[in-house]
Length: 422
Image (cartoon, rainbow, N blue to C red; front, side, top):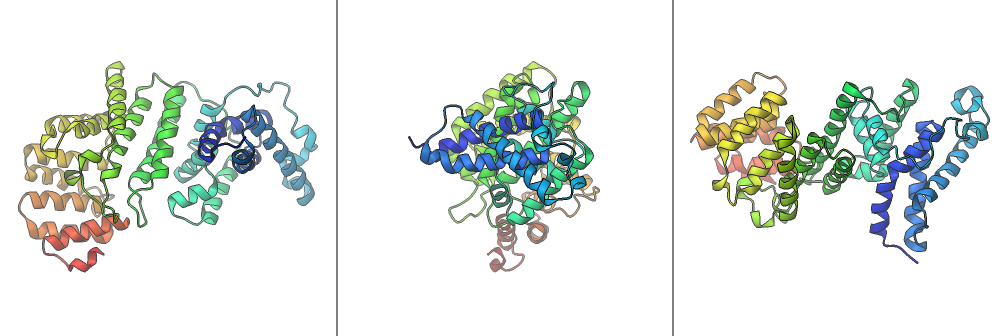
């Protein structure tokens, strides 16, 4: 009996880290196991929709991946000189035989695998691509499409990341404990946060959003929350993603043009995601120490609960931003606080916050700071300065929808030709 391709895809993404974890636990050789696991997932994606799912999908994938791994080792042994391959030190059959102290194949190493993909010895791009491929089960082509780069470029990134693991001797399934575990969990959450943000507002390209990335980040964070249900920051990050992504349908017009929060049709917001996000953050906040993801989720909840922009509880948002700057200070937090200060105390006060931020060389010429300053200058009645800053922000933005929106604002206030908006 055939299976629905969408259901098969969902199942394969769920099983991907379990299969890879089982292979690495038994055989080591992360770089070979990861390739073999991807081949097994591809075989299943092609066969199962037409032939139906096997009774034991996980076992089927592990078996097929193990055979692919054996084929790889044999191919490498015949193709390369003996000293060029670690596996050559022992016969292939011995390499693929489980060690005497091997864990049973039924063990789920998914969480350890996620922590391994976010090891501090790996660069941030490597952490992201490995997480999406090894834990998310996405193919190289899918990741490349999501990030808008050629598949060959993404394949090189993945290859370099696996090479780093191989050469540095990282133990991918070594689940850290104590303070190291907490530090690694922060790295995991940051990677998922970056994936979501790239999906919610793409850095480059013609589309404002890449829903596939946002959805994958939500899926992985939801999965992590099931594994660590008592961690407040995991719950906070999931709530933040849901509360933010709930607005996605209202953020663009049919032609792809950006719609700012103040002008969005709130009837298009996803109420189910808002309700789930509010329930998550409401349960997490009273439990213990409050971290930056929980505070960001609380800010998003205040925005989502307002029926109109005028109904927004800006004093509460400002108080939350002030707490956020104490727990997780960064320039973009300061940008948000500047807007909240302007809404509570007036645009001049918000511009004073931005003046302090301009001393940060990372932000002084960033398009988001320029756009925020333009917005506050317009609120203060300084249309000329606002128009100039909107135009500068448009020139520095790398996302085409953001660039067009900012250029339109500059033209509206009399700076630059309207045709620059595209």
